[in-house]
Image (cartoon, rainbow, N blue to C red; front, side, top):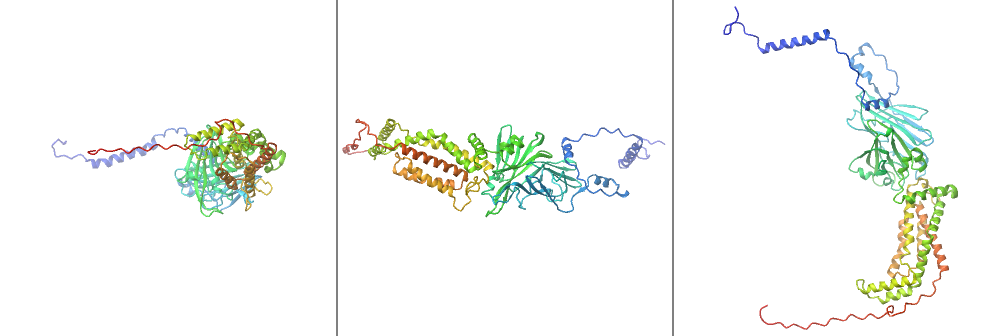
Length: 593
């Protein structure tokens, strides 16, 4: 009998009973469809991103021992995946030496870093081979990695990379992999070049990860005076033709990163540089670090600059490590010559440098004598102005009695007194009548200052004068190494003698006493400056003394000119200022105020 609405037949199954049945039917349909329905055709394999393609070109596995044949049990999917990314590492630490005609470099596979980078043609201040790297263990060694983004499970700067050396010892490659992260580094050198090709890449699960190749703990000769202050990071913006530098102070609160289309970027000190030149016009990123280190000769830790370089997701650049010598830099890349900063007076510094070099090569064979010859030529060039100035000073010495008379006439006059202007008018009238330029003596000094500064920049920047000898001096670019610096003392003596010869008629006794201190001040200033600069100024002094002796001989003082006639020029006594009459006392009226 059919169930009726209100009848007492069977009730339908509840939701709790129907839900498991529905799920079982759906599972059955999915299982059957795998065998009945054909899978859709596979589409084309998606192209590798550009960054991964670049990384794949750099990451070429270093051949190692052939893996053993896998057993049947190892053909599981997990084992197959592991076989595609095998672990790559060395069993022990080994060093690799690269020898060229210019370099002696020692690599270590622990971190794939540089332990020593020696320039064969240069020595340090102790006359030992010049090692540009800092041997301190407290900072990462050159070409250590700083990985951006997620860090791998291992320290990339302490693991043992597998090395490979080829191309007659000029190509050094390193590779490491823990099965998930792959890191490669490659250094290619040339026999007679200061330029190397550096490449590195980091792959994390097949994706390229950007990283910096670092050079920390300073750069160059650590034995020079105040070495840390001479070391900087540097980059050149070609678009603005601007050379920018940063020192350890800029990174005192943490690393500082600069990014741009730089022609080059890296580390420098006064005479050497280690800079990257990007390949394929790629952008460069340079990071400046500050590392506190205690080096020999320092009583406390000193902040040294460090740099990190990156050219993108993978690093690929040419690396110049060598002297900042104009001919060498231009041979590598004409833009690289801009790393030499000739200073504000570069328009004078560059010609001075080229003339010094030409004179040393063709005439003297010595930079000290080249400085002497060039100084004499500069003094000959300004001789007309200097001669005019000395003649004017000689005339001023002749009119000294008249100037003294004018000064005595207005002896008790204060600076604010209106009659002080009359004293100045009389003095200037005397100068005009005798054809004297009171400011003529300053002109030779003003002309000499740009040359002095330009010489300073040449001696500071030109590596050709580093360790250049002259007589007892061993390095024209540095202060003397003797316990007592001889050239500055000779300079003080010549300054005193020149002052004795030079007329100072217009000076009062106080000014003359002050001028006597000037040679001592100059001696103190030049005592710690480069010997070549002291030699330039001393030679200029000697040239001035010789010219002054000639002037004194052929231009005798003679008698002083007569005072100008007329009442206006006569020295009249100064009348006292009359006192104002005293006011009569005012009588007051009695009463309220």
